[in-house]
Amino acid sequence: MERILVIDAIKALDREIDLNPLKDGSTSKKKPGRKKADYETVQREAQLAADWERARDSGTYKPEFAKQNEMTPENFNALLSRVAKRKTRSDK
Image (tube, rainbow, N blue to C red; front, side, top):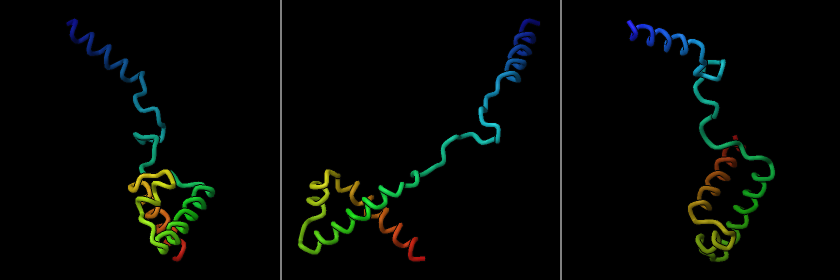
């Protein structure tokens, strides 16, 4: 008998407590993926990519260029990839 009362009490509490704070039925507040870059970031990254192309043509190694700009080679490669994607999207 006591078990039934406890179970009924738990069910009543579950109905009162809204476990999903979002009213639209979604389960997550965040969108997946990277946030869209603002104008200044896009311009800065494009300028850095252009500087890299000039440095590459003059014989500078990519890890050395990345280190001069206080970046790891992996982060620099990601930056170059983002700039290239933006360029191909704008060409369409």
